[in-house]
Image (cartoon, rainbow, N blue to C red; front, side):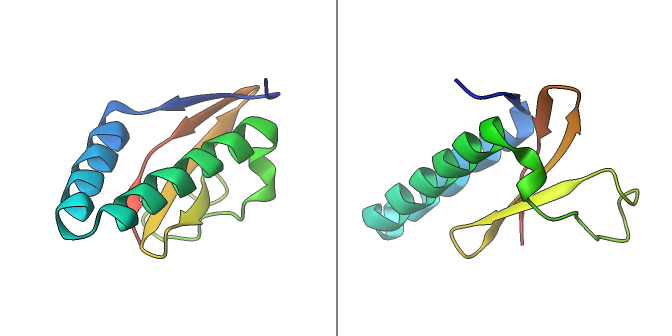
Length: 92
């Protein structure tokens, strides 16, 4: 068990499922790789979310969010409050 609790937003969960379903129609191995890499990100977030860089998107408040890139095209956006990581999800 990690030091942090990760909370995945409903929107992020729905997007991940939708993208995995689409990838599976094209290539099942790509869908498996994407979901596996996302699971790895979740494991890493539970251990130390501060290992990931700050998100520098000018549309977001500075210093509030961090990002985790995975599977070439995806970016998980998250914030940390005490021992909880709140995760969103977007395409890079």
